Image (cartoon, rainbow, N blue to C red; front, side, top):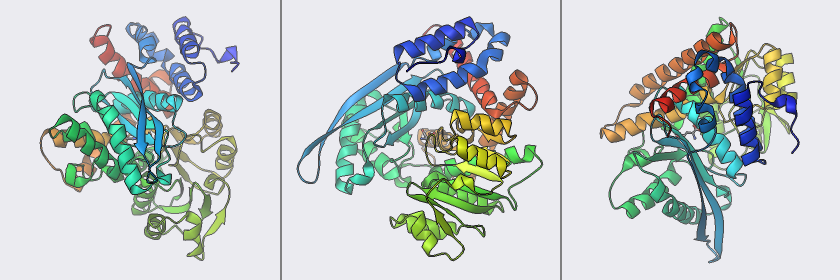
Length: 451
Ligand code: GLU
């Protein structure tokens, strides 16, 4: 792939790091794009902290990349094989931490991108956790429950020697929920021969999963959005909100929007989108989705709802929360949001807004909350789950919710302060998130020596 030379960082050290990244893995476009964004943001940090310059090259190279075969037998007795990944990106702040994604699109590029993102995200939570990501190129929806359990067991058998409560603590992500984490943990426990609940988070409650872990990312993105709106002297009360996606993140974000006085005027799933100006009935949507239905099936039950093939973000709204998947909100949607007077876009998913779309939003005066800050509530409550498991404690949902709300608010302050300090008044939060995340990780890496 030919790259525009003007895309290169001006600073000589950063340019060298960038060229190394391209040379080592010339085809990893998701990873490149994420690294490029970080390099763009940290120049001013390095002027103030020249001692962190040498960290950048190390930071862009994962500490360890594990790729493995996952053999299993399907219901028809056929032997199948998939590929598994765990990218242990950075452990300067604590044990590697990050989710497992099961999706056909999973490859090393995606997992490295998500792992790199996780390093900064985890740093922004203020918790002591490093960054990692993993998964497999499997479509869990195409498997029976028995097949998926056997798949998880085979996956865990290969992963077991690389994880542990003080080593690497995986959790869920797309296609991996508490049921799958329970199966993976179950196989892990058989292999190691003792209980170690802190080795995985997002477990079923009965196995030591934290209260509010399923809700955490969705609630967290709304807490972050509230702070973004407050900066503009607005709030969610009376706001029209579009939320894409129909997994945990989206549904719990919708719940919190409604509880905050907002109206969910549009939503979507992989099969299409709907518009409902009077407000989506989130409980009914949850019920329809829980029975395997689509948002279109939901819309059929509601007289005020209409369906569309395209993106949900082309309708009028004050706030947009992309909570589906990477690159779902591109230039066309960004233009529509600017034109329709949207005030805030915050990423509930990882990387849903394309770089081009981010620029259009920025130029159009729409505040943008980057995922590494806005959706950090999930991994933050995972860190709280690790604390509970280590202390053999169980905290109430209210206790966890209060802590989550403080963590999101602190993350917002960290990001906004770094944006202003290094990129000037009114600077965008993406630069702030990269700068603030980098500062914390770079300080830890420097303190550890060259390791
Ligand atoms: N997969 C989630 C994320 O992208 C959560 C990871 C975790 O809880 O470790 O942040």
